[in-house]
Length: 220
Image (cartoon, rainbow, N blue to C red; front, top):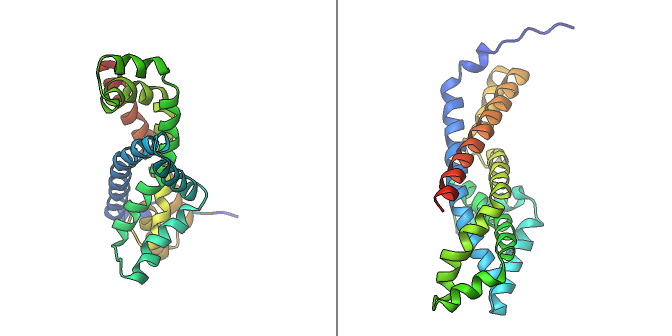
């Protein structure tokens, strides 16, 4: 059996691929920042002295980590629309990615905070710093440094998982690939190119995170 490759049929839609890749980058970058913030707040909630906060944070983490991302996405986009909360596909995609990443980041950040010696807290408090000041200036940065590799891996997983949002017609990279394939029926060529682009995006994001980590933690 012989097969003639026609990658030109894919690259004829180069502008569509670029737009899809750019939206993937945008969704991933914004969800990374917001998801990390949610993760830090969630970790504070999990370690809170107030039982209701611990319970709510724990419920959030368990609910998100034990349900499929695509179900969360459909709930936000289709489910909430039934009660009058309507979002665009891109808005629902971003919100789903932030919520999903936030739950996983919560546990990762909490592990980093728990790894900081109790003496660090006590030393900060002995200097008349508030608990919030101790957390910000003494605990948070060393904790993030300890769990940074795990965090960056989770960021990459969320970026790759963004392919699922094509199911609600968010026009990211996978959506672009599906559209192109539906026009030229060159499945092998289309998904080979899509795979290569995702690989490049993953390597690019890893390099960016490596540079950010080196700069932030070196200065610290």
